[in-house]
Length: 77
Image 1 (cartoon, rainbow, N blue to C red):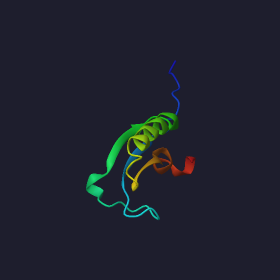
Image 2 (cartoon, rainbow, N blue to C red; image 1 turned 90 degrees about the vertical axis):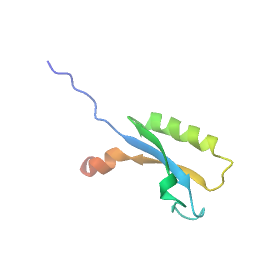
Image 3 (cartoon, rainbow, N blue to C red; image 1 turned 60 degrees about the horizontal axis):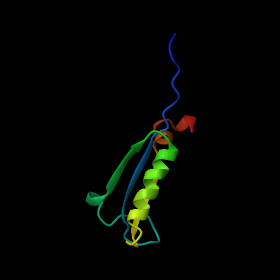
Image 4 (cartoon, rainbow, N blue to C red; image 1 turned 90 degrees about the horizontal axis):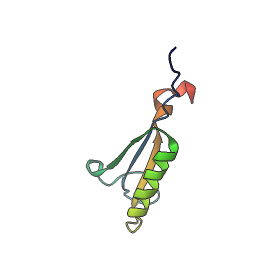
């Protein structure tokens, strides 16, 4: 009997310094911080929160969570 595995709900956490606080345009794409890909939102959020706290003194630094599973399978979103 084969085991039914739950769907992977992959999330990407990344960040970088923004050009200004009004938009989402990065100063230098070569210096984006790719934190990692996580198997669920809870672990992605924990990683996001850690990085956000570490960089809170840099006003233009922002981190984001991308719901990769929605990009990979948009009809299932």
